[in-house]
Length: 104
Image 1: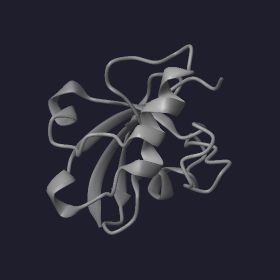
Image 2: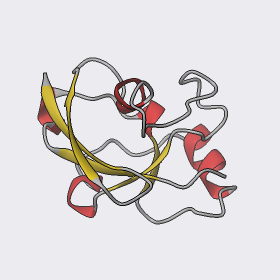
Image 3: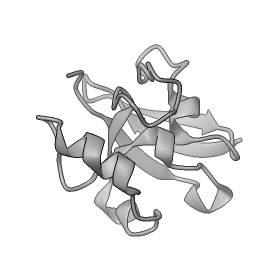
Image 4: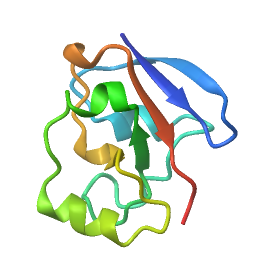
């Protein structure tokens, strides 16, 4: 397992033993404080919206157009907004810190 830092909607930070090879969304959806992930990771709903810590944003691949299209429709969008279903969690991302966005 690899460390993933998650700030829940109440502002509490959790250290999660995350599995590499899965997406960040897949690691978050089963947590009590995780994401809804209604579409199951198909990049169709934005219910897995997170804010990536600025330290980590440049280490992630750029979002695809489908992701940016969904993000642009969100009222709670920030510069570090990403859909966690589009972030493959790898060993290189050990220590990644994300904040779960408010439900919309």
